[in-house]
Length: 309
Image 1 (cartoon, rainbow, N blue to C red):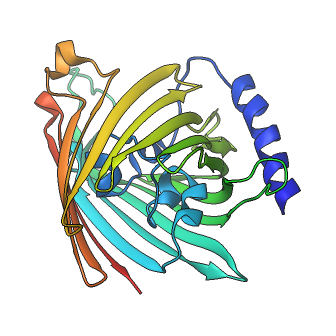
Image 2: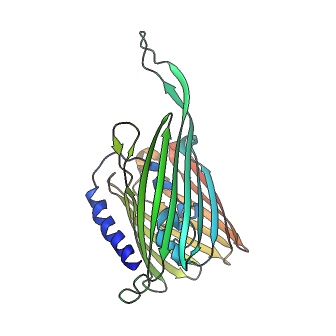
Image 3: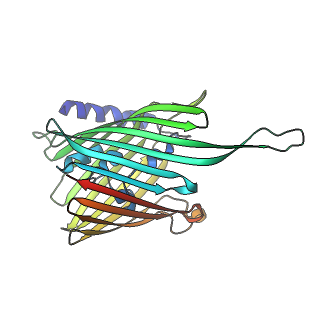
């Protein structure tokens, strides 16, 4: 199993670099498939990732905790889209595994035909668009105890489906991630996401949004997590640095905030990139909330519930 993890990472990194180059990518919803906790920290979560939401950001995070956990979150996304995630983390054969599912639905999209003799484009009703991804993850703690102790690693397999009107496209992708516990206060993470087949609705296949993440977590205190992350979308040639923080009050109430750089603040407004949120937990149950402003595009409110058992 240790050799399998190393082999996956060795193959994934060169392949991702080879796929770089600006272009159109499919399944854009994969870029925002995160838990409310991760969203409220501006996505700077790959080195923290100590809950079932790790399946969406870094599968190695499943090895950061021992509990079983199930979580559900939902939001009204931009342009009246509806989005939700389901995640689960558990134990199998002494090792960690996880399950995740992401859904995105956009309804009431206007459908028009070609122009008639008078140059008028007639309305032909509306149609819906739907996206779904199912993720299976596996993680192992201390994969290289002799040569590199304190290194955890994980892999994920994704099954992706998108539907627009009567057309559907499918893809299969893989994620590979590591978390290195450098000290009791510092963790480093490296993750490659969405390496897989293209999605073809008709004749041309569009690649998935391959993303390389590098993250760092610094535990500034018993109740304070400070995280930084850089995300590089290789095919899109987009680069997003992010900073996030989480502070726990009496280990029952968390305040979270973050900022992601790289957005078009000139057109979307000065607040785009900002995110805030909170979390409440008691007796193995928790509630999370995240707020993300997007200027003229609207605001995102994401709610989540989780339980550990």
